[in-house]
Image (cartoon, rainbow, N blue to C red; front, side):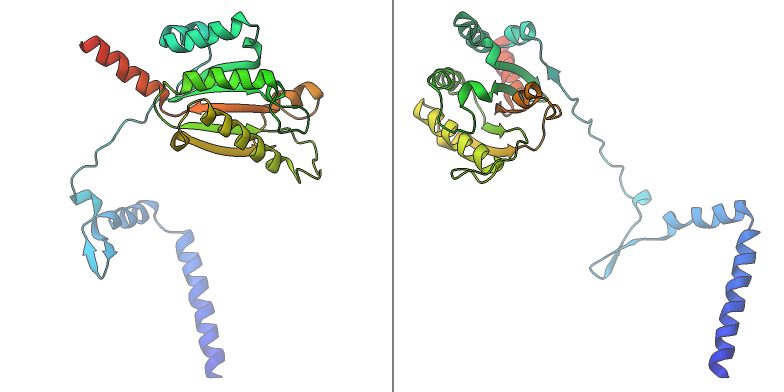
Length: 237
């Protein structure tokens, strides 16, 4: 009986609270909770910290603006060395296999994967070696980390050499990295990311779209900021 009476009292209290909350004065309610930020602190290792309102104002730093430059004419004006690289590729009709762009602070050099490798193969073609040698000559003179990103399409892959697309991307990335080192790029500057079929540019619904997704991106981290610093130094002299 005692347990039952306790339960009934709790239920009665619950319904009374429901009725009282449904008819609560909104102004009083707002005023009550509005006082909390000034009276509550944050516990820290057994002590208390004053509320944020009583501390010094926070320093608000501006968020860096995103940057996207894909226009080749604009990129040529930015960097004579990049302009020379693009001119050399055009001279031997290899410019169609590479797309240059600046995204945020990085220079992205996207290469059509089929120009470098054969189908389901990680052996670099002769024309691909020539292209990598040209890119290595350019990258060796640029500061910062050089990140190699390798992408494939989503075609189901399971061969004796490659159990899936991620393995194929990893092996291709390793081949490119070794060729870059052979051409003079320091190993300490290189990083490899094998994305495989992840992060496609377009849907893998047609042979043309799958070919677009099969790509290698050589990304020079912090390239734009380094370029700005060089221009400032030249202007100061």
